[in-house]
Image 1: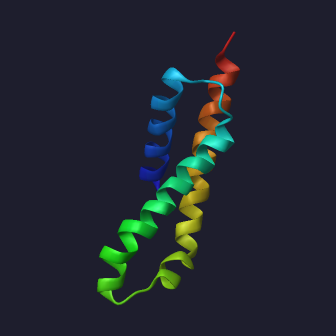
Image 2: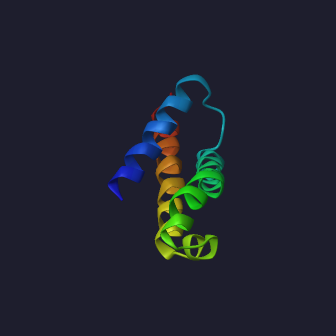
Length: 87
């Protein structure tokens, strides 16, 4: 769980070095959607299906959605903190 927070904040930090006008909530959602698309294209067909699982079992797992939500919130709170520290 701490890894997802770390990588969410790291991604936001790298993104906001150049562009700081994007809403943190929208950026977090975009990052999570990108990760889910990569899961559809790479993780499920090459890892889950060969191990006997399916798209349904992968995407119906509550932990996946908890981690996606934590990622969105991590990026949002990083953005919010950065906005509060601007003059």
